[in-house]
Length: 297
Image (cartoon, rainbow, N blue to C red):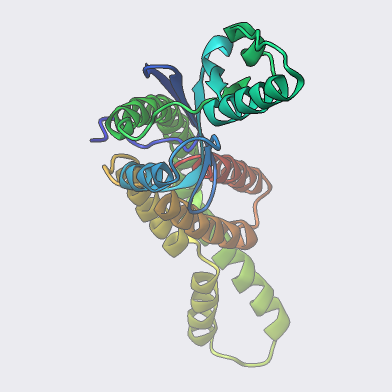
């Protein structure tokens, strides 16, 4: 069960267990990826069915990221090679030598070491550990390594959550600065447009109330009040997502994208040098948030 959210997609975990003649080592490394991709690297002597066990357990615990699993069985040099006696070949040597001795009238004078030193009778061969009954031990060791990965991802995820929270607060403060200036900006825009229209109309005879109404509509069209309201909603959504118990990376990325579109509209509509700088700060916060969101599961 996840106890800390969100999770980072970067993690590492390792575990070892002792077999009769070997030590089983498992390492798991995870990196950022849009989807879950699992790559299992088994040593050649290990059972192929262990790969399926790896995939099933990882897919049950992780939602996103590239996952590399390395499994090997380490053995001391003295355990890797065992003596092998080819008794059939030794018997064939003995028969051939006896026939030679009988043919030549010689005595057969062979001891055990003489036979052992004959080519191919005694040799050292690579031996594979008996892993047929080790599946349970492998599964337990895999779970231990995977738990280490998850704990690391959770720790980094908690850090990312704090960073994202700080960025959301900075973005919200900038948005508040714009909100506080909205009445002033709208009134200034209205007066500016009205003055220009009146000077252009001059003595055309147009009714002033009609002109004022049209100017009010024009000023309303360039207002950013709706965009600011939607941005407030998006900030709330992002905050709720950060407290979710489910994988959040994709949802968070989507909300940040929506915030980016609204922020671009605000920056385009505002005709104020100071607030344009504030809008640029907001876009900088969003870029940082987007970068951090790419690290979250």
